[in-house]
Length: 272
Image 1 (cartoon, helix red, strand yellow):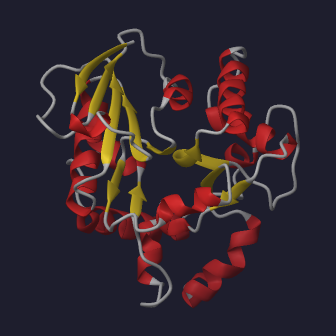
Image 2 (tube, rainbow, N blue to C red; image 1 turned 180 degrees about the horizontal axis):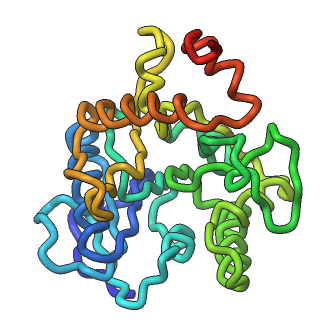
């Protein structure tokens, strides 16, 4: 890897920072969008990018750009233990920030890392582990927003995660290995509330004003335009519109048995 941009922020010790990894023009474009939204709320925070396209990035947006031209689809597993920060917030490129981070990094005063449960927890994809079958109450954790500190035990965990993932060509999703390792480990980790990795923005329609402060929105729908699924979604307002329509369609479709009773409560006409 080659470091291409160094700014004043790294001339002194940088305790906290944000790391993003993006390969290809489309994902780099999303990473730029994510970083710009973060700058609106946290203008002084250090943001590092690992990418195979370091050329023509907006000046001053990223504090350090690391070029890696042989990136793997899960390059983040190699990049995360190499973070220069004492405390790192890793985020996928399909994220936007809608509020300041506040005292989020303070979680690492007590824990080695923190992340959120994944959504669709009644789906076999999110229940999957490679070596362990766990209780329903222990689903996969979403690795697209991952807060961690540079401690010996945490770095060892991250390196083992990468080693185990890259050693098994049959495993395509890094969260499968992560689920196993969290189940096995004595690592001190914390499950963040969903507002720090908001995967279902329609919960905003149900939350009361004091329930939560939405902070990081993380949605694969920010990638829809890359897959020919409509116009680019770049704002929370546009995402809410699409998600509300998709939610209605989902509840009108074929449902798992456990969801049938809730469908009837949501729409009494369905039961007739």
